Image 1 (cartoon, rainbow, N blue to C red):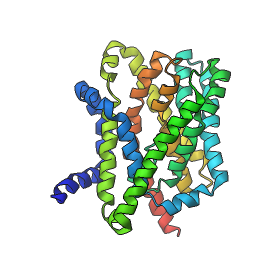
Image 2 (cartoon, helix red, strand yellow):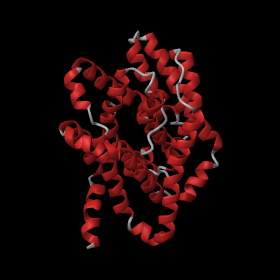
Image 3 (cartoon, rainbow, N blue to C red):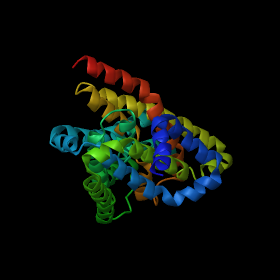
Length: 317
């Protein structure tokens, strides 16, 4: 009976990269399914965090947490250097105010919580990515308040303490669950179940990908010109942020560079929309859904590079 449950999850794990890419298109093609899964978006994110914490090596996470200089550099890069640089580039190219706002808010957002899961699917440890995501989410209200006031001349209408408290709960809950499951299963059984856990992560990511596409099809039909422009922008930004992140940390090491690429290119636009909903444009609301499309292609597109870097790192040991 257990094998009937585990077999499909292991299948999802083996074909994760292709299935993730298909997930967003299923959400666009089947609006009713996207609408049905939308209420489970938050649960899927929390589930992915639990899964990541089950698969990650906690000793490595503790070791990464002691690299305070590197973590500080990551946070400054994510929350300050990226958005400021993007704003000046957008201004230099003369982008419209709406498009400038969209790319600015994207580059100011923290990494997605599942950045660590994406790295794990590529065979790369996601401990550093998880730590960067946590610190960036907790510091977002401070950095965003300053950035929006300076560059968009807009006040952020959200309670910093309320956001901080909610973020702590959202991060603490998966940690407690993962700690309990690890204690219950033990190291041996946890390793045996790693394939199934990874498959469950893929399933939860697909649920998120489909659910977050709710309403995107209608917007594409009603606002085709804007939607196409934002679709192209999402792909351009995905490429730029991934390449910039990799280049910025390439001298530190391959692992750090891949982590920077993944955390830079995959931003938590859902959190950003939640804290800017009262001041952001309607184009940004549409962009939140459209930007998931290149995001869910990342594991598939980066797989050859990850494989090459992994093999190179083995050869140099």
